[in-house]
Length: 374
Image 1: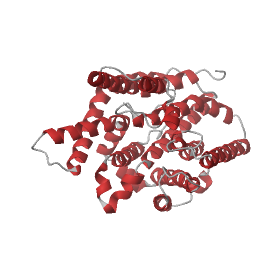
Image 2: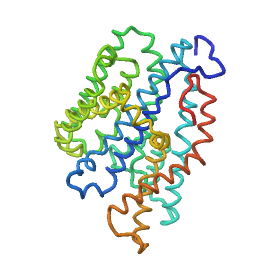
Image 3: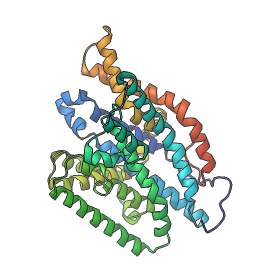
């Protein structure tokens, strides 16, 4: 890219690493974990967490969008350009090793048990390998290969990674007014796409898994990464944001869930975006919440949230089988829930040490702005 030559070493930017956001990542994982395990479905007072725990996915989205946007913004301010090559190499080192490992593992387990992969499953492997599984999911349903149904979110994020450097480079050369017009036009266009999909009765999960119909959390993350609305966000109390986040989530829970296709979805997705963005702002601006989420164990687990997310479906199955076969364990949903959570954490810790950490060390060699330590 044209512009000032990049320094060989990363530029140290004070406070760019936010340990509290690692704690928030673990919280996002817990929401998804609760959603994918039937235990909370049996507790009347907490059933809403099971039914709407998928919002943890959007919490991941707003965090990713904010951090990558802010990182590229800092890179541009430091070097007057953005290195596409180093950005993509960093993303490859972060995402690909574990992602391709879990694909290989799940295919191996299926072949070991069944001997061959049906034609439909072969195409879904192609979708996973080509980072297009969310499009397959939109029109064919969730991936039927065991333990892979949740991987559409990674393909969704990879599509975001593909375009964000170019988008940032273009927008950073424009005035604030042009950027604002651009974001408003994108918001309106994608909103109309979702309305069209609703009117055409697209079956669930099409609207949920496609980036141009489920976009608010990513969009808000990008805007916040640019520093949008800071003239407002700095003036309000963090606890106002926390209250607004809870209020938006409460309104969301009062609406039909996302698998019910209707005009209520126009409000639901907007509330998803507001709820996750307001929660992020509450954490980002509150000293008290930062202190709570920066507790060592939460940061430790948050750093491993990628592995926690990837392995939790597999761990659910392992826990269920152990409970069934071992007489010492009580045959209850609660016991499978806690055992699955423990197994997920163990799998993620081992994976981080054996698979992710070597590539994360390599990733640091492509950093232009100093980020989270390995």
